[in-house]
Length: 465
Image (tube, rainbow, N blue to C red; front, top):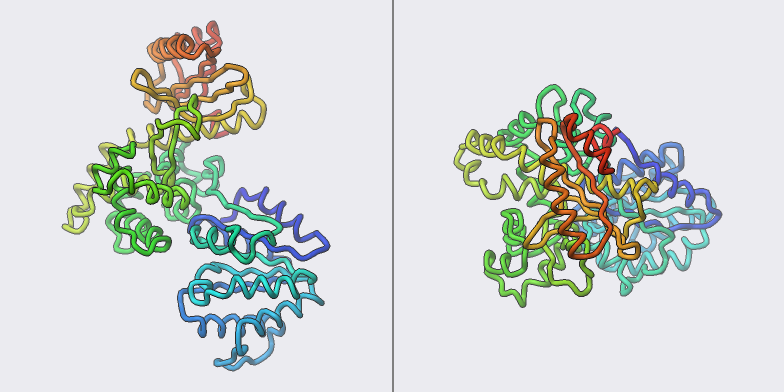
């Protein structure tokens, strides 16, 4: 199923319509839908599509060569061992063809080709400068290996630097389109799905909409070909040659450790040496360093490390710490652990994240009392605020409570929020706007008081409409 890529399709169409050659870099985490996007875009266009695999440069050149010949003449009989003598001659021939013919060229999973033939970026740069740049080609380089794309293609030291017309990072899907995949699911169930998949289309499509979310998770745990059990380590091994220490760091963060000192003590890496490992994991979008919204990013030392990829977060919260149960054939025990903690996990992770994303969306649409500098959280030794949006210029903040309970919220929630608002106003001198996000709605007493105090009550239906 192909959904919700309007902005990316619009950008690709703009480039295709331009009267010049374009070099496009499209990248993003594995399974996010890069290939589906490009195939959908190219369905009514002349497309040369080649996917690199993990093999030798000789085998890659041979498959690339055969693909060129087949593209130029689909009826031609190509010998099994046909190959251009080298990459330069193959790329030059494709470039010469594109000087006479408008063509959309896709080099999918290009990092695999670079791994086999390290000179390919330099060679492509040379042929781009000499041939492709004056052609009718739109070349799109894609890849899931984020580190290699950024180092070999996007880096200022890379040979292709400065030649791209567009650099596109493909995000997972927003929860607003999940109902297209799972039309039988309630909005609460869609939040549960988000809390496991993070919006990655491939993972969403593994869900059987005729059974509950927990039943789907149990099926995956019991399956010999489980995505949920094997995929995270594959993602890590794809990016990192020596992943052992990185896995240990992810396990520590998944276990709830947040500061450098806590992580250092848990994994046995000196704090002075831990920084590069954390920086690498941040660059790969596996983790993020989160700050209270009031802090200055370059100055603050109050950062908390979190796993940012929701699929990885679920794995390191539940699967990694209990892998011995799976290996010992005790899947029943693991299923029981997840069932007992799943609701709390969804509320603290998926639901709160969706509330913050909704705040960001409302800010973009101009639906907040002010235009915030940042949307996030606030915490210190006194209070914790689930959702916050701040404008230091206007000395204003929105603070919000996100409640995932299955009963209507009462005045007790507002009373607690008022205490936090008073504390925050006294400490920072900011004007405080209040919101309450409720999965199950609000009782009459809370709704009436909220109107009087100008507190915005936000339902799950409103966020997912």
